Image (cartoon, rainbow, N blue to C red; front, side, top):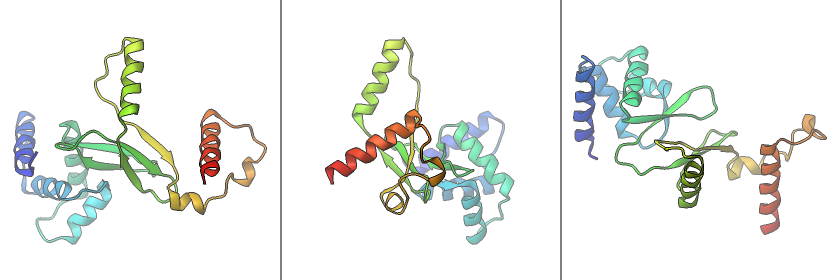
Length: 177
């Protein structure tokens, strides 16, 4: 979907709420849809300060992002770093995220097998799936190399299900190397 069509749809969304596409909202919209990376509200606000154009307040950035998410023009993602990050989703195929707990890198991925398993699980439970997002937390290749296997204070502590899965993944990957 082209940005002009998306902006028109956003303007119609605002109109239904008795709001206008102000110069500030338009500027925020344009900048958010220019980028193809995940960004926080604070980062978007810094971009607004650094670039020429109409002054935009921090509050307007946060409120406009809220409207964009509410209207499903954008999605927010908890990347585990204390703030949400955003991405525009209209015109983009569904995807999930791998979030590195070390450096904060976000990798997008899509796997038809995972999608099929989720649908099958819903069908077994008689659950009507409307939407979903999958966020895998872990360590990217670079951070994994520089990270000790287990923090010293956890040596000898019984593993949870997630830790057991991580250990199995490490063992499987080291067996294949």
